Length: 285
Length: 44
Length: 240
Image (tube, rainbow over all chains, first blue to last red; front, side, top):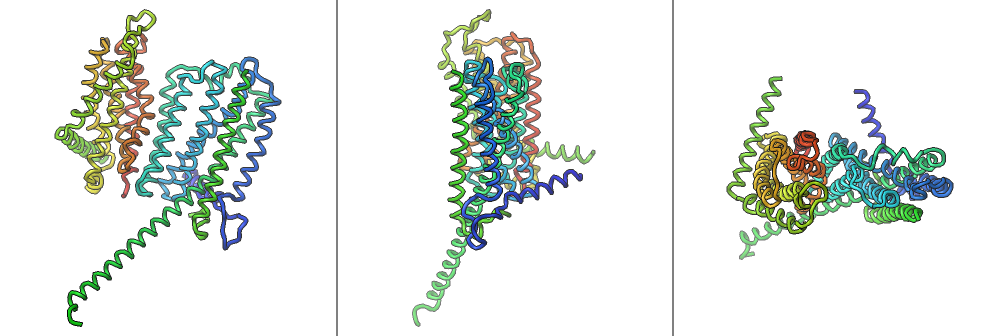
């Protein structure tokens, strides 16, 4: 029970990193973009890890005996896998939190996370496919991992589409949250049931019997993981803020529409009063 | 011969990441400008 | 303990009421059987045209390629036809604002879900029978193991209807629901399609001796989708 409370309080505190408290402009004029101290930090870290990744990964590390240069795609492929799953898991958690705590923050974070997840899932499939062609001779194989990943990609495209449905905002957020949870469960189901098929993807790392991830490979892979993680976090922060701004605009438009309606009714009311007067007292004046 | 796939893969990945990042920044600026100043702080 | 049993009975009773209502609507409007059934039969025939029946499978099996892939074609036809059936199930509600009324009458969302899903299951099951009969004829299939086939069809139908009802509920009321619901349902049906096809192949061709493995897995899937659907509908239909 205490663990649960800790998680909830951490969740509350994590809202802090998204608060844009630090920006060039003064209190009066407010921020002019979605950047802030936190995005600058992550952006810098991303660039900082990109250079070693390319340097050690592409240049220093020796080519593999059979796969030669193409094995270096693992420095793109494996980190993409990490980011994709973490993002979709984040969407799962945020969806649950939204349903329990009803704060718009969690709904928007779920959406931002999912969009970044879809992006990196695409990169995952692309890099995997390009890795596969020189290695297996084909761009695509109907093996468990690839197939379930492709299915997962489309599933979350569907999630993003549901987020853009034309229904009331609150209902839409609720349905998206349910879908965020159901999609992750279905990803698990898809993975485990397709796993009954035997395929080319065996073990966690690609043909682990052939590639020993040590030395410069391990080093570069580490930088790959860091780079992708920093980039992903940077993107999520930005995307979240964009979603937040869009939400504010939506609310403003709604208020505007309601006010217009109200004034319409008032005008109608007063015009009816005027007509009534005419009717009752018109004629002689 | 194998290195072609690596180059294409890396360029594509970096390209996608770069383009999306640029789009995020641009859209961020555009949205911030549209929203009145008092609503620009990102908190509940 | 007694209270749980009482609540469960109440829920099942409500679900059956709703299921009966949906089936009655179908009987009077005859959309599923007037339009969807001919459509599914047509799909099967189109498959037969698209895949040349001259190609022979290599190996000892004396079968054409078309016959070899017929289990997959059958399930594809069923899955695509189900899209219409499922969409229709919710269209009849939204046309009259029934979902709110049902909710306000105090009916458990899980019961609403179960009821609609059961109605669709029945309709899809009847679809299975008709389309299956045609498939046996035009694809020259000989069923070796009826029990495996029976369990497969039953479990697969439940899987489709449970997931379909859930996604129809999620997209209900939106103008794009006709394209959005399939986009959600089809990826989810990927494992079911895979396993149902393998299972049907086992029932028809009996070449791989895995026998009951596939139908068992399919049954597990059916249970999972039912559970997920019942739990989710509660969250979906909260308050407004």
